[in-house]
Length: 221
Image (cartoon, rainbow, N blue to C red):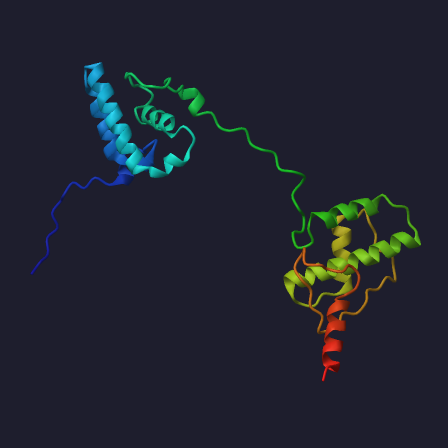
């Protein structure tokens, strides 16, 4: 049996005008349009109060706002396109003020270049760039590199060469900081475990506490 499809005029939401307050739905919009068509202002006001109660039922989370009743009346004006003549208990909202975009809050500092190292590492590298060359600076770079290697292994888990860490230091400094020739980092024990940031990481010890814990644990009888 051949199936026939009737050409029924379905009204899809995608083909309708976009709602300014979609949380209340089109039925409330239709109620508002009928209210605006009422010539008697007293009747319009009674209808407006009834619509406010419906809006509160449809959007109960609005009760969590301060002065939620005032908010509902503002929403009613917005649904009505700010063209509403009723006796409202609150001043009618101004369309320009309601549509004003909030002032963006500026982000603190610049974007982090390498999130797995963190912003503090970048600040330390910036300070080292201004330090004169000396044995103390070389040791500071070495300690920094050991710490960066720990951070790298926390997030990547794979082994990493000293050269990779040195290149990251120079890249993060925009090549203002040169890692001294011949600098070497301590070898990492294969059983070493590194914690996530904020969990008592010991800079420059290469997971020594973990190694000591395993050694003592192995001696227990």
